[in-house]
Amino acid sequence: MPHILWLEVRSWFKDSQSDKYKAIMDGLPCFKGGVPINSSIFGDRMRFFVLLLLIGAVSSAQQTETIVQKDVIDVPSRYGFPVKRKSPVQFNYFIDRSIRWKPRLRVAVAVQNDFLPFTRNDSTFISGYEVSVSLRQKESTLAGFTWRESVLQKVFKKTNSQWDYQYHTYVLPLHNSAWRDSIAAGTYNILVDVRAGNSSRRYKATRTFEWKQADSMPIPHTEPVFLLADSSAPAQPKLNPMRDILEYNVPYDAFLRARLNPGDSVSVNIRLYQTLDDQENLVQQQFINKRMHKDQLVLQYRLPMEALAEGHYKLKMHIRLPDGREITPERAFQVAWLKKPVYLYHPDLAIRPMRYLLSEAQRAEIKGMSYKELGVWIEKFWEERDPTPDTRYNELIDVFFERVSEAVRKFSNRFKEGWQTDRGRIYVLYGPPEKIINNRYNTKNPHIIWDYTTRGLEFVFRDTDKDGEFELDEGETNNE
Image (cartoon, rainbow, N blue to C red; front, side, top):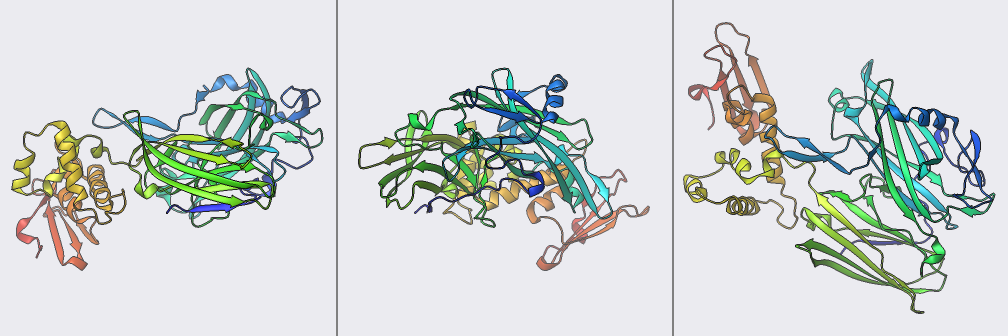
């Protein structure tokens, strides 16, 4: 059964990382400081403020191209085809509602460590960046705010990681309680501008959203969004910084907020479909009936990510009241394995390092197979060896091809890919050695010893030709 968590009138998402960077205050204009401007975004009575800093940002807008934000980008591989990877800066938005049902724009921004310039400070590495978020309508900049963030890393390897991100959520109100006005219906753009420390690195991207007034809905509600299901901080769920992509084998919750009346009896039907060849196949369904005690319903639904393969899905919610009012919000999304080893993109590439695992009979079996047949055969091969067959994620295939990728990085030369070398083969089969005795600079007998103490294994590699290529010395290898 999926995990359903019902909450009534719960406030989540920190308004800022600290009071120092707090961007909003109830009862005040949306953005503190700056110059007042006229705008119809909140109706004729509303005037609000833009930071002076934003003026400088707008004046320099021509310096960096503004792109339409993408969840993933194509990165060229060494084999001539692109692979899907995360953008260096990710951002997503959610128009949430307060306890009093006032609109608030929540923007989640994740900045890749490799995007940031780090400097060493004693035993640590520090960096910083600025995030500017502005709201636009057509060619007009209506409002904006800038936050400064600092980063501290203790491990040098993390400073240039393309998988580690700095995550923050920023909150901007779309309602001004002083004038009692809210954002007008229409089409808007959110611009996120990230400047990396003192360097020239800059990232500017936009997303577009349509805003509808709540009174035009049979049951006022937010759109369904996806949250990162962080078990270490369940009271502070994080908005997924990717809008339409959910990472394979990563836990997520679907989230929706609706405004009801105390005493309402509400029924909810949640259905999850996988889309295959334009057909929707039901993956999971659950019915919920509840009587409301307060005026706001918060639905947080744990997606069965452990059962979802890569592909396209659609989440549909049917919320109905006894008086006949109903809404059917839905959200399409894609599950993508963004850390997928490059070898798994093509069966003819994946089978090459797998030769270390295949018997002679298996090698003969796959000989002459078509591309499609080979892909099916490889999938079955790993399914039969899956240590956790009840989940989609196969730890064994991930470990094996991660070792292959690491061997390519460590041991490749002009003539062979890393996994084809002797050290690469041992690395793929046994993993990193527990102990390395490095005598590669011995002028008479350059050699390296890999010791797998707990397994009782030892491998000796010698550079016989003094060309930097270390080959396995079968005579001195202990693999009993």
